Length: 156
Image (tube, rainbow, N blue to C red):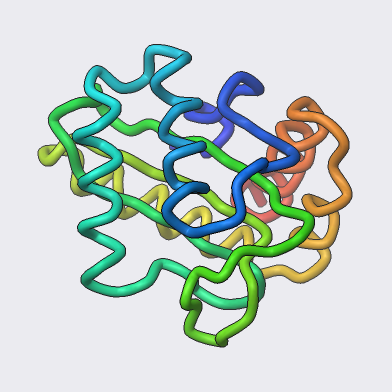
């Protein structure tokens, strides 16, 4: 399963408007809800916040991957946002987050959920890729960058 199979330009925001962890999570959940990817916006939002209380998903290197399991989706859904200013996500490296991938999966999609989490982590482990994403001007740019990087990293 490729990230580009789950992501679409409609659920990518190249300039997040919010400035706090909770509000950015809400902004990305709203993108999913607006595009009919979640059936219950509030329950998904609460589930992501509950997961954040267990441990921050700010994984370092300006990246956060908030995620949860919820009955309010079908399969696995993903949204992505970029913050030029940075967000305090209580990351493991204590640095602001600028790249946020939100992942929501049904409780029975554990394998797919973990595979996509791993794929996102592996892609974002590369500094040049993170830097290129930060320069993206449109959702189409983001999709193109992810597609190119997935081909380079996973298709060889």
